[in-house]
Image (cartoon, rainbow, N blue to C red):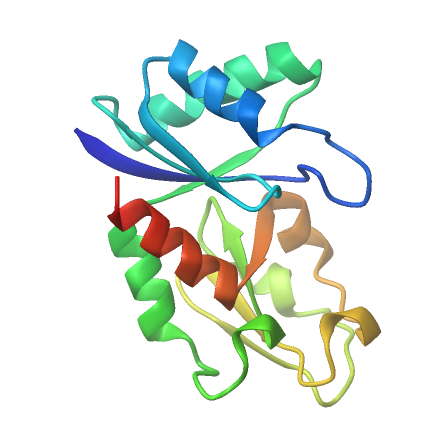
Length: 171
């Protein structure tokens, strides 16, 4: 069995993309996924399956579209990927709720960050498939825009990344 981690895009955020986590777990059961478990209501999912990550993503996206009536993007990661994200965190001394990780399903490109508008106190760093953003004054006061990257990815704060990693490690 493979342990997979799925981060759903735009689920239960700002009153849009309503998807109760009990329904998400039921969809996973229907797909034959084992030990489906979620963390908070924003579409953080860990499960086991014989499928590859890509096969699991496609199956889950198909079922979620049937459920929601519109596509719901999914970014897949493994436990090893989340460990790398944790280890590569360029802001290890910052509180986890002030470090956002933008997860992409493709490599980071220069277009993702070259026209960034933000407060001077905010810091941005990139890795292979993630963009790390440090919001020392909090995300709510930010003027930061990463339009292309936000269109292709989904974001979680570092606290959530670490909690989902722990969740995935314990089936």
